[in-house]
Image (tube, rainbow, N blue to C red; front, side, top):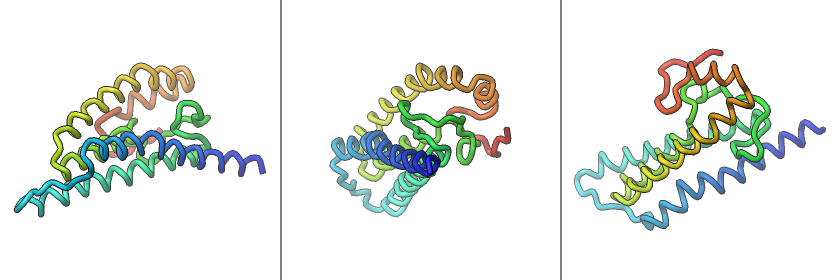
Length: 169
């Protein structure tokens, strides 16, 4: 029964963190910036709107999948309630930071859909903040926590540009 309770806590914590962090960064703030007003792309809409939709849809799908992997591993992506094991399955076999890339895809998809240079600038700020967080906190913490296992993972799986084939530990 304790295992079931831990699993439930992991799923609840993951969902709460999903709503608070990416929900704010990729949803609330872009809405505040753009009002989610569609840009009139005229004759180019047949190309621009599907591209924007693809970026947003793929970003949401990868974000949800990456978050679910943390709950499956009985933890959350939140630094206050991490997993006990290093998550190196699913999309994490291709790239170390799929959640951050997914959030950026969602923001840039909205920038395209809404024709907002302000959202492009916001995406640049988010990228700078994320890279700073990853380099200053996340990677050193994973290094201390998982040691050689994380070192091997970091050597074989790129942080920002996905591999073409999955890494097999």
